[in-house]
Image (cartoon, rainbow, N blue to C red; front, side, top):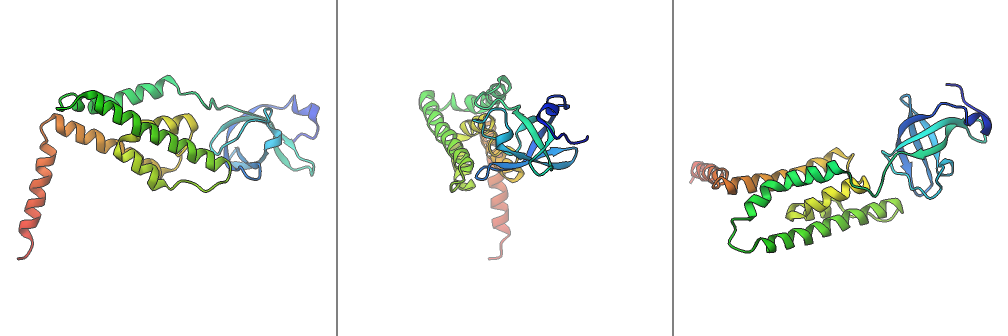
Length: 217
């Protein structure tokens, strides 16, 4: 595509949809993918000046030129619906909560105690992700990933899941996602094992006993 050199011509250019591949919030610019190549993108070229772009955001734009005649993205609009959780996010969460909920019901104490604990730790996880997202946007010192994982492992993963989807935070880093979903799978496995009478735990203890018995005296 040929680059455009005037504001009038921009209005006639083809609108392209792509994603931001790099964004420096402190300096207000980054790059968007354009046919496998990186195209310069500046915050001033967004239609909405109050929008805060993030790496991975979907955007639409037209190709134009900057003051030095270099190709860049112009008339940029965000395709993100930040701040809104979609119906499918709630469905996934409800499905993930089925087995843990069934495991809580037979416990000797009131289910309301378990529900209260879940609400508290999920709220802590949600706030931690939101705070870390805000720090990232403002170039401040970030929360450690281990602190986010800790709250998820002690039962706050529902809040972490919702915060990740709402703020599009920690959703593209593969290593973080593996640990996060590992925490969810651990809770699911323990809950299911409890419902089945702890066959997995018994087998695990048998393996440990067998290994210990093989150790030299």
